[in-house]
Length: 135
Image (cartoon, rainbow, N blue to C red; front, side, top):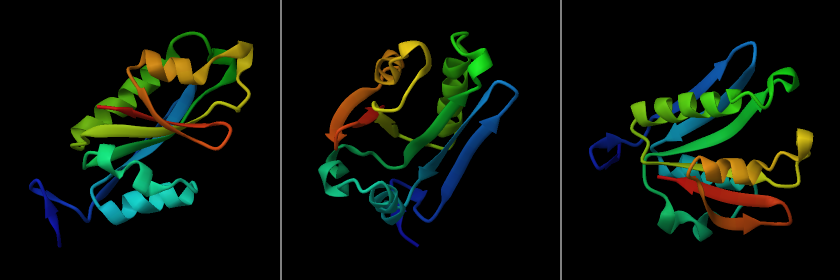
């Protein structure tokens, strides 16, 4: 069993929440091989980002708000719940892949929303994929 900064690297924590308004899911990884797998599963070059990832790292896989409840701040509440759970599980940073080509209601700008939550763009992948990080 390897250790990194006194954390055991074999653990991962799945983080999710769901209610009548929406849901989120993500994971906190302590193991560099699992982090590589996350990038590889999305066909993203892990080596491009390794120098800016701090272990343990959380990955936000999805936030979804029911169409009937959008534009009420529910997505932001869900995100902050996710973030709190990440930091409760010792995450040092949060990484996400934003699909800027995904259709959003009312011309909602997903990338701008993430930036309003203090995410910064760390790279692009293909035509629509934007990699973002928050410390």
